[in-house]
Image (tube, rainbow, N blue to C red; front, side, top):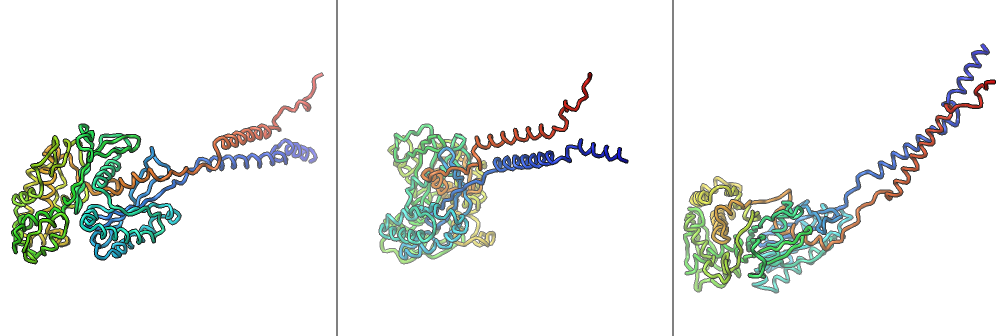
Length: 501
């Protein structure tokens, strides 16, 4: 029995896990391993991305829209990578329509601005820039009554300053800016700027103006400097041809075609640009209250006139052509109205009213021959008005009635005005959105403005790189020492080995 106790005691002495030193070493080792893993995880975890925000209000001739953009706080080649996160269409007409009651122009923006408050994180409100850009509607109002346009802008400014954003101003954009920023939008969304690819031209059609912008290798700006804009984006320089035609948006163009048909001040007209069976009474004063046609108002005209549809595409196209001047050109080549335009080059993106009209008419496929496009328009225009209404019961009558004119006008503007032929026409792509962002000037405007917003430093890891390496090294050495020490019971016990005599 005593021999068994001696053996058990010897086994306990030989078992390293039973000694206090070994337990302490084991605990320290486990703590070191946990600490090492924790430091490694914290140091290498993905850093939360910081974002900045910007708000742009597009105050067009027919309506106003609000767009919210966000981009990483760390800029990419001095140009922020901007994406649209939200849009809000303001109820009611464009702000230029409130010339006689400017306060309502500001009030109309309230609902969309409240949406912006909810969409932009509260901690970013104070640093989020807020811009309003007014386009052709306000350009026309400024021509007609500059004091009224000033009052509208003041009312808008007063309303926007009540919100917790960094208000940067409300101003009227020039036609050149509108066209150029639309070009930036199309090419940015298509990743052509970041990759330095050949660019896409931009075709924008609004209610009161239309813009064409593209890069031409043969255009250096010398022949027509006013049509030249230079951008530097993502380390590349772009020399852009751009022109904006005021009064050639589809709404004002319709006024001009009606003015052409009512020059004699008659009491009724038979309009080929509206479907057969369509009839409406219009007011001469309302028709001619735009600067685009005000100087053409016939004398001694009655108060109203009846507009009756005839539904003839060919005759409609002749009426549309009458609002263009193709005879005068002092340059080597022109589009229309004596405006210089270099030869068309590359693909084009057509947006805004271009898209909405052609999409309704099922004419967004530009691979079909131009003759087939004309045939489709001819078929639509000749369809009786009652049948048109039955086929599209959900479309507002005002818009539905104008599609024959709008489609004819777009085709005429592109082919007769800008000189697209069958080959170049097939290079047009009608677009509404690209990668979730609306095509238009606002994103390009915001993208350009990010160059003036200082970039933030990215969030840094918890430890500097040198400190992280030092800690990992120390812990690794400590674990190695602990491992060696834990093998202590296995070390040769020279003192206990029997000596040979």
